[in-house]
Amino acid sequence: MLLFSEYLRELLEAKKMTVSALARLTGVERTTLSKALTGQRVFPYDALDALIYHLRLTPGEEKRFRYYYDAQFEREGIRRSREIIGKMFEDLANLNFAAPAFEETRLLMNLGQYAGERSVFSGATNVQPLLRMVLTDELSRPDARIELTVPPARAFLTDELLHRYLNGPVTAEITQIIAFDASGMAEDINLHNLECFCRVLPLCLLSRRSYHPYYYYDSGISNGYTDPFPHFLVTHSCVVCLSEDGEQAMLLRSADQVACYHRHFRALLEQCYSLIQYTSDPLEIIEAYQRCTEPDGFYMAMAQPCFGRFYSDEMIATYLRHELPFFAQILRSAQYRFATLRQVSKFYTMFTESGLRRFLQSGSLDDYPVAVVTPFPPAERRRLMRCLAAAIRSGDVTGRCMRDGVFPEYLSMCTSNALGVGFFTTEQFPLTEGLCSVQIKEATLCRAFHYWLTHLPDSGKTLTADETADLLEHLVSTCGEAG
Image (spheres, helix red, strand yellow):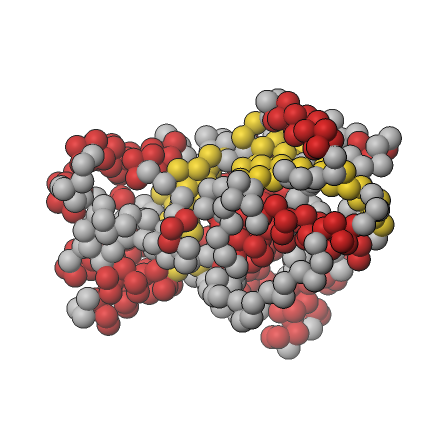
């Protein structure tokens, strides 16, 4: 992350201004400026306005300037957590869902031929082919099942599963137990746990609800101190035990060994918590949104903005499809939900320009399929866009247009500080048969994602409030009439 001192130096160079000249113009002592430029001293807050004025900063530059200044006083863990989450969303935004350019070369030998009489494998060049063969052998079975305690930080195995999910349906039920770090203060964000979750969330989204992560809290004492193979993977035909660093593996193939590890895994599972919950039911998704909404605040990121602040009960009843077998029930749930959104004091909605354009063109909602909600007519689309622009200008809604690549177009996220976080694949999700919601309740993970979203408006990764409102009004005036 660019520090305040580095950005100040960058601005001085861009504006072609010396430290002496800036000190003379602002009245700030030259030594104070020099120490702020080297990170030895925090620049006095009451002199910020003078710096901004005499450096002739644009609104965007001023926003970044104040952001980096405030970041100096922030706990390192919170700042780092935002970087981890931001990187994960950028990676998800750039996932390539297209068919592979060529078919993967078939294995030249089976597991028995590769392993021979060996039971211990050393080095990545031996361990990784072993894992790939074990996965390939198990995934070829109609009743495929994989159970593992290998940490998500073992990148090869996680990346291999992700690759398989992206390149074709995987029907295997995959269950993973993850050790969460229990150290640190309860109010802190544990970066180890966050990194683990960010590694497995893509698997949750792509697995068509067949990947099931569980977790337990560990004291932080490594099992690897006394056990050379503290992690393991179990299939129907074998067990692979792995060292802490993933560089050593032991292969067990006898039926009694496999059965023993399978029983052991199931016993461990009974002591763990489910990390996520899946659902594809529209009613359950509405309820999941509601569970993630705080009494005084709603916080959401999605390609399309949330217009729930402006839905009346009559409007909901009009556009919800009456032929739905559960119409009355979903109508009650939707009306209760949007009544809540009309009343919350804090309303955050982060969205993208492409999502705005798509809504204006089709009138369809990304997070409610046309089988549930009929598309809004052009006049209604324009009204909602104008209402949102006005609410953003007045400050009633914290709405921002995210820059390209900040958040995936196919995902919706609703956060709260402690109640839970929901991730929902939308109609833009390329794997249409895999639509689902993924919900987490682990407290420190909830805080991490909530901090990321609420900090987004000041991060430089969005347009300003006025720029966002201008964009909404411009789109309505230029392409709204053609909708």
